[in-house]
Length: 202
Length: 183
Image (cartoon, rainbow over all chains, first blue to last red; front, side, top):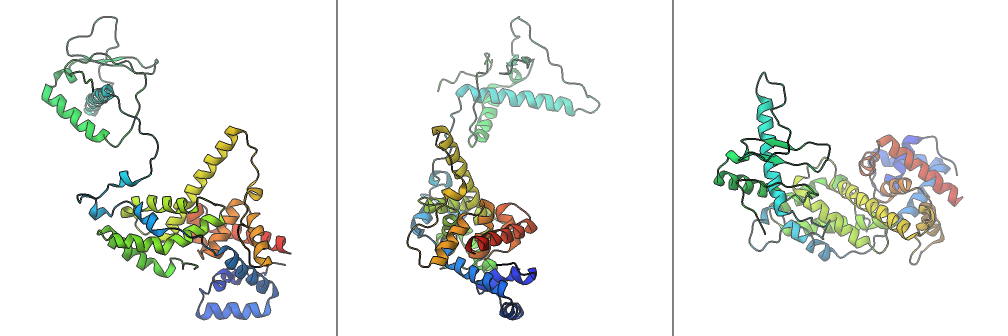
């Protein structure tokens, strides 16, 4: 069996075999196949392939539909199961340790302070960051330790410590809402005491 | 039984998606009924066996989870094939790793794939299944999508992540290999 040199018509054979050609295309293929033994043989193969490979295993449509998430417009209705709860269990959710939220809050504040400082026009140097010494931290100072031994511990004076209790709670609350959909693991990060935040033992 | 492709039916799919977005759960049933047979067939032709239904279900779950953001840049069926193919590839990788972990010697795709389950009506069809089973994975995907599902080369390229030209070459190479096996 050889390949016909008429590539354009050969490309139409699968569509013709499936009955999806009409008009001029169909007529052109029929004329060509009538005089081309190679394409006639290829057409037979395509028809046989359609029979051999065209059988679909039975599937339970009702079971599939039952596993689908609810329509977007119905997700807020009472009693409608959320998408997440209908899904099969995916990767194991890594619980966020209580102090990890605190680290995230502190990191957010540090990033914010650094960002604001960098954004000041005319200032291109890094914000003042004092490398730690063995001495005790100042009142109200916040230390952020890194798990990476090569990254120094940063000390920031007048950051979180300047926030009121209520402001801290608001900040943590907002971070928790962001955090709800994200599972992350904080490894063996050294966590120093942070003034102004109550210890969460839950 | 063949489940007509999405070419002339994109509008119908689009209307069903809109109904589903509006809260009509029956539209979801209609969409599953329209496309599940083709997905099951595609999975079976690519070598899925006992897990065809699970694969089809996972494809729909994944698709419906992001269907409210589906913009219709490709046909729904092409999009579903793309999702199913990725799921199937992921499973194969997982299975391959599992086999390696337990020290089972892995065969080639050719020897692993045995589409001759069940009764085969005609010898030609049986040999054709054998021939398709001997194709490379990509050739088999392209051949199946072109011959059985009626996708265009452009649509096939979307599904398998290649170019239209590459899809055409894969198809013709597959057809040549099938002919050689049958002759």
